[in-house]
Length: 63
Image 1: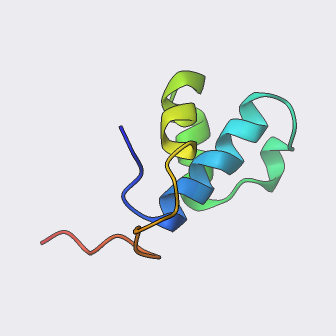
Image 2: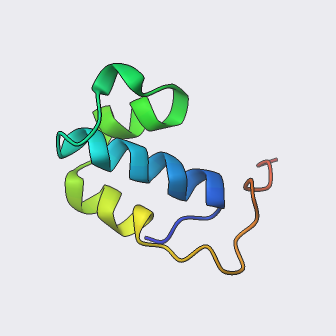
Image 3: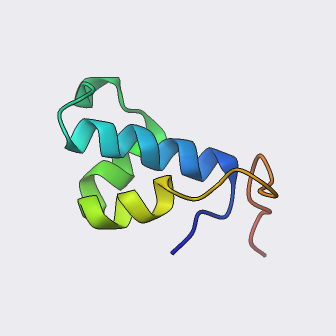
């Protein structure tokens, strides 16, 4: 599942780093903290590996 925005891709990267022990869990905030808690390492890898090309900075708001 690819990321839908650059912000989502970055949050997944931060959560993945914390899962791997490369970053402090206490440094996570908002979406990255939820992703850390709710997603597997494989799911985070899929989101974090999404190329930035063509992604909006933020995902459009859902109606």
